[in-house]
Image 1 (spheres, rainbow, N blue to C red):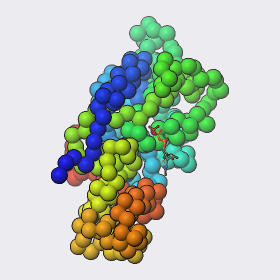
Image 2 (image 1 turned 90 degrees about the vertical axis):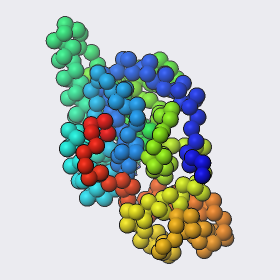
Image 3 (image 1 turned 120 degrees about the vertical axis):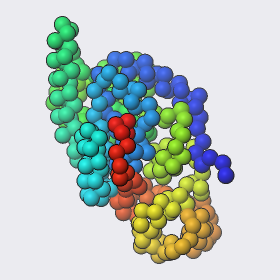
Image 4 (image 1 turned 45 degrees about the vertical axis):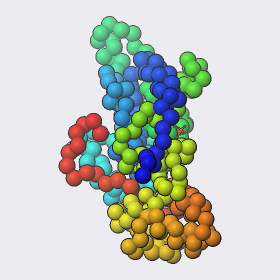
Length: 286
Ligand SMILES: Nc1nc2c(ncn2[C@@H]2O[C@H](COP(=O)(O)OP(=O)(O)OP(=O)(O)O)[C@@H](O)[C@H]2O)c(=O)[nH]1
């Protein structure tokens, strides 16, 4: 069976080059991941981008996981010496704390600059992450809570734009960046399920069965029974999708697949984390 996810590395490499150029001016990275898949939505280039810069880790879409999951991830990350900020950028939850941390990081960066005889200036931060993880929503929330009014500064490229959040903090609004290659197919499948990579890269009829299989692994298959009145039982993901299509969509597999994925993405199956913290320490690179 071929790979479930297809990439277009040429296009990605161009976007990444533009970003790398802009990153030269950046002091602080707000790394945004999807709280449903904090490991799969870890961008493989992040460590390289963040070298020599401060970084804050944001797990967005906290409303799409259970409180118990949030606590488990919080504990797991703290064992990796990370303090993630859990946000719901759609409703504004967790934004104030994130903003305070960004401003504090800005103050520290400026103190260091002054110690080295350099002029204090607005600290430049960038919000980075996979497509659709909620970067723009997060920036909009940060803007609504900005402490001072100021005009946006034009960016160097059309896609990359600087926005002043406060006298000491400027944000670069970067588009979602896909890695040029993603070796881990399991991670890629989860990104596809969560809509964190574009649909051009996969066939929903092959990804929806993966969602069923994952829900089974996570012992969450009752969510499917509740929603569609069709129990998974010992069916494989493929045969569940087939039976669902027969029962509800006149045998139309694609409709069934799209509905399943859409229901998960819109929270119609409930708040379900697709990853749980691994039992042992994985290392700081996560
Ligand atoms: N439920 C929920 N939805 C969110 C949250 N944050 C963002 N969204 C929604 O997710 C969708 C994508 O959010 P965006 O902010 O556009 O994501 P993005 O990362 O900027 O996407 P790209 O521009 O493609 O990189 C929008 O419909 C948002 O309203 C969140 O915390 N919870």
